[in-house]
Image 1 (cartoon, one colour):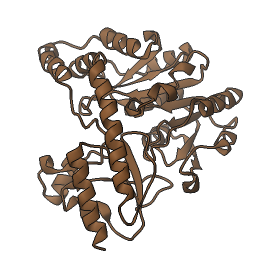
Image 2 (image 1 turned 90 degrees about the horizontal axis):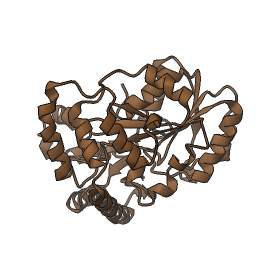
Image 3 (image 1 turned 45 degrees about the vertical axis):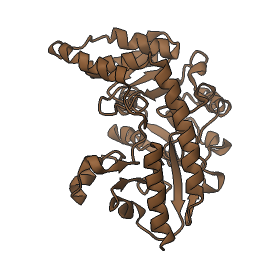
Image 4 (image 1 turned 30 degrees about the vertical axis):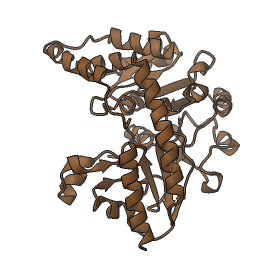
Length: 357
């Protein structure tokens, strides 16, 4: 099983802490928390658990269709974005995948689960981990599927539509499926500019994966979805879906959440402000090299020999070490953008730890 952020219960047991006292910078969840309307919808849905969920998820799919401006037949659902990724791989059975490195680990886990082969393209720190034309050159006839995380997790790098079009055009020639994971894109201020949604009708080799529960601050509820205009691909995915994979409470919460225009607008604005605040402060801290962020998390490199995660957990702050990402090591860390009070706490503790060296 891959290592992920957000494991406060496990960390609390290990260090004998109260999990409620840990400030979790390791999971990239909306710092504004769950909206009151979403919470009410989920509480009200308790009465519905005495029956099975609607196996077609009619209301949920219609809400997503309206939100994405897409026909519901082009939507596939999953119990989180990770399940959608596994469903795609299980349905299409790619023999070989091309993955940039570093990137989200579940692409690798999904491919390995069907005994597929993986070719890694190592992103260069000297180029701030941006994809380049050399990556496109690695898309050959033996590559069945390509995964691109946009923005990348953990680097935060955004990939332009122009570059993704180049990837898609090359992939048509090699009969390669391209999966664009936009799980964090809704947090980006200009998200529509970077979304591949507008390319779906022109490219039948394109699948988009999205997460909902991060943005609406209900990661324990688990909902993700995929978008694709290719009927043959969608039929293959739908054949392997587990029925009733999304519980009724999560479905009702997200159906309501997608109508919360003010909450969505406020969240994007708040995160944009806090991202710039935290980025500016981190850049001033001795022994840190901070990569420019685009989204609700920031990656940095520590320029001295120190177990920063261990030092911070002593202060009841949990950050994400990037040492398990291919292409990174234990000098790289990722922190979520949280509230001003929490961000200030992180900044103060980092200064205390690093200025005392």
